[in-house]
Image 1 (cartoon, rainbow, N blue to C red):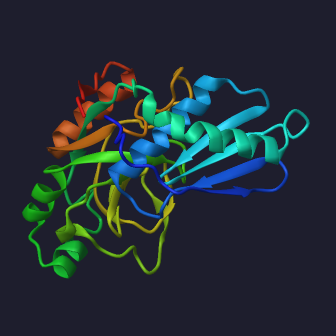
Image 2 (image 1 turned 120 degrees about the horizontal axis):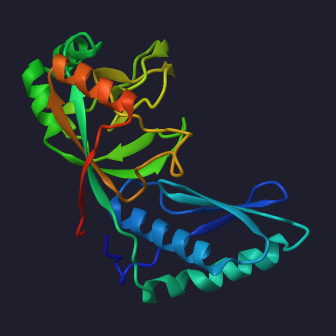
Image 3 (image 1 turned 90 degrees about the vertical axis):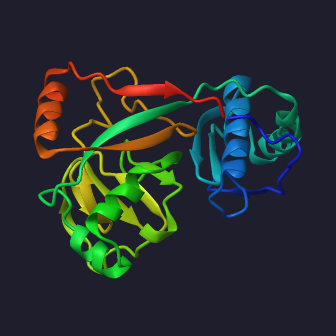
Amino acid sequence: MIPDRLKTYKLTYKPLGKSAILIEWPPEMNELILKDVLLFYNRIQLSKKEGIVETIQSINSLTIIYDFELINFDELNLWLKRIYPEIKNTSYTQKNHLWKIPVCYDTTFGLDLSEISVKNKLSIQEIIRLHTGTAYRIYSIGFLPGFLYLGGLEKQLHINRKSKPRLEVPKGAVGIGGVQTGIYPKSSPGGWQILGNTPINFFDISKSIPCFAKPGDKIQFIAISYQEHVHIQEQVTKGVYLLEKEVLND
C-alpha cells in the first residue's frame, strides 16, 4: 500500500480515562484513511516512545494506552500531534499479502443463502460469483481474536444483519453484515447472514503469530466443494495445509 502523500486529515484526540488517548479519523471505511491510520500506527510503533504501553488500530482510529506514571496526557498528546504530519515524509514499508481462502458454499454451510437469494433477488450461483469475485481489504481485526473486518463487498450483496442473532454461529462461518463480509474464527453468537464455511484457522494461540493476516492485507475467497472442504479440514487438523498467498504491489 502506497501512502497518499497529498492528504492530511483533521484528527481528533480524546482522553480515555487516565491512561489512554483515542485518535479518530473521519468515520468512513475507505483505503486512503486506512493507509493513513497504518502509517501513523507504524510511526508510533517504531518510535518506541517511553510510556506507551500499547497501540490498538481500528478502521478509522488508534487507541494509545500509556503509563500515566511515565508520561501524562498533555505531553503525549502534544507529541502525537507533532509527529503526525511527519508520516507523509516517510516510506511505508509494510509488505501486504493477498490470502486465498477456500470456502464451501454448500447449503449445509450456507445457512442464509436462501434468505439472501430472496431478499437480494439473486440466484445462489450469482451470490457465490459475486462473493468470490472481489479481493477484500482487511481494515481491522476485532470483535473476536482473528475476526477480520473486510471492505469491498459488492453492493448487490449488501444485506442487513439478522433481526434475531443466532446464539451460536459455527467456527469458520463466512457471512455478510451490512456492507461488510467476514469470517467467524471460532464458534460464537452472531447476527451476520451466513453463506458458507472455510476450514481455515484464523486464530491459533499455539502459533508465534496467532493470526496470519493483518490490516492492509487482502482476502480472496475461492469456492470449493463439500468434499474439498472435508479434505482441507483434515489437512488443517494435521498441520500440513499450506495456505496460498501472493505479495501485493499496492
